[in-house]
Image (cartoon, each protein chain N blue to C red):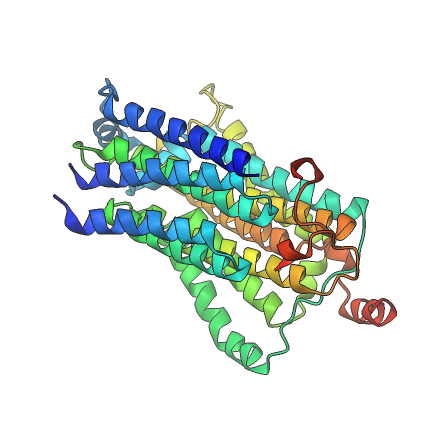
Amino acid sequence: MPWLDLLLGLTLVVTAGMALAARDMFRAVVMFIVFGLLVALAWVRLQAPDIALAEAAIGAGLTGVLLLDTLGYLRRPFGSRVDNPEERE
Amino acid sequence: MSSALVFAWSGVLLFGLGLFGFIAHRHLLRRLLAFNIMGSGSFLVLIGLAQDGRGVDHVPHAMVITGIVVAVASTALALVVFRRWYRASGRTDLPEDT
Amino acid sequence: MSLRIVSAALLCLAVTGALAWAVLDRPLPEENLPERVAAAMPESGVDHPVTAVLLNFRSYDTLLEIAVLLLAVVVALALREAQPDRPEQMGLENPLLRAVMAWLLPLILIVAGFLLWAGSYQPGGAFQAGSVLAAAGVLLRLAGVTTAWLDNATLMRAGLALGLLTFLGVGLLVMIPGVPFLTYPLEYAGTLILLIELTLTLSIGLTLISLFRLTPPYADDPDEAREQQGKTP
């Protein structure tokens, strides 16, 4: 049995679950970035260094920056037009 | 169980988890996260199954690389649309969902 | 609410079960793709199998993927132009980032160039190099460095389309001797692939940068933005 791969695969699922279940949006995004880096590790274990490079640069790096940037945009005061303040976080 | 198959299985679980998150969450940003997790899951299934017991296969590698780049482009586009929507309505979810 | 969650959970369990069944019950492939790729490598013009698949054996896929990227940027730009609003001030007020960028930028550019060059014989290539280039652009943007050439709308659009146009042009040019679309002649294959990769790197980088910047290139005057922020606090 490939124990290291089992552990990594399990960690992937747990991290994805934490990204989806996190109450705080910022936490969710950070867990998602961690998830992207772990997927890059999985590509290395699958002997696909090309995908690992692309995933680390794009999946974790650029997507993370895009999401964090949007979070900053959401946190900006918007006035009184927010209908669901508990969702704004 | 080969190590490729392990990742194929975790890809299956990730896809299911992502699908659940995609349906259960109303916040559009969370849906985008869930959608990306679904995408990663399907990439893992694609590579894991192709390499199970047969060694490295470069054809699905190339497909997944293009897939990752398209995924980030669509995520970025979705964020542009989402920001527009937030700007126009002040909401982070869709009225159809509530 | 809870009914929705329960039905979603049931649906996802069903989908996961179906997927698991598909994994367990998968048919054995009739073609041995790794062997076919290895056999065709001498005709590809490069030494790295992934690059050979991306830009020679399955170049149609890559061509259409670049078209998808361009389409995404066009839609993003169209959204900005239909409802023009003020560009956000994206620069983080951080002098340290600016100072570090002066050191980092040449390094990042060298890494991007290396990745591009390495793609012909080892892991690397246009996509990785393009995303590293995009990272440089994003960092510049975060550091608040004004990049006048990025704000030139015509230049920007030319750069965005350059990759797809070169790819299409090469694909059409090789048809002159009477071979199918995108079938490179053996002796020029390496050079043509490198040319396509070079322009793809530039276009992919610019695509990701402009998707990040969100603003149409011409409405990006920091003074104007500051003035506007003063008007509408």
